[in-house]
Length: 325
Image (cartoon, rainbow, N blue to C red; front, side, top):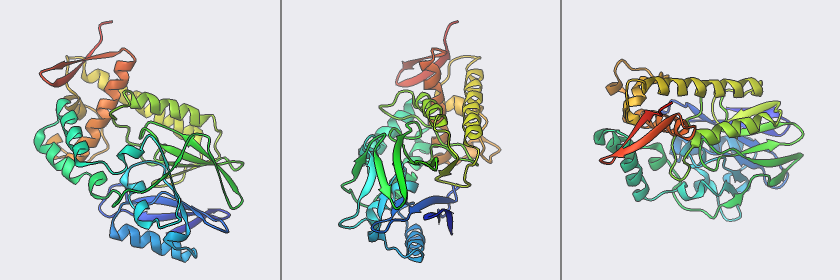
């Protein structure tokens, strides 16, 4: 589905088969020479056909446009290298680049990390083998053009500015339509669902970074935010406050889970209120367990950074407890 949001700015809704996200919102900013497409979708035949078809409806082909990728997740980056051709520029942030197409050793290492936080090997085997980032990621490496916070682009009548918003991923990069104060925000802010804030190797307090990014985004005085999924966001200030309150409540749930003694993250995870349909935690699909446990770890690490929680490692298992007051 194509929708014109501003003169020369179009939303291209690309279906994501069998995904709870339902679709990725890609965007096209018109330009007389080379339009800019913001985000792609999974590296799947169905996604590629849908996106290429919508580009054609707007008079473009995959190799007649440039691409701006907000972050490394496969539902945003997956198709970029497949669509790009000689002469195509794909803008991408530097911190996410090492994980654009990680080797098998990365998934093995992540499996070991999650096992140290208490996830069961049988769940991890399925989660790592079926992870969408592994099976729907880019088919090849690509010489991305690195963008940094504050970098400026010009497309058609629009001046665009890169805005670094780490948290959802280490390098997550939004794109601000200056003057209009409209933000292409990827998964930094979502209107109908909350962005997944997980743990990242090399970013010890991803939730803290995310909350800082939300505060910085609030200072932009946005008129509208155009997210990577679901509906557009018209009251950005209110939505940012809702997201901050959501994480404050989740932090309280994590603290409550530790009141009767130390636990690993996988034991804390089922004690948090998730928007998932299940009667018993064992019924949850291993990939959803992985995402939820990653969020729990991120919240535990933030509490540790705030000196509310402390951790220790016992026989390779990471345990968390409330700090002595």
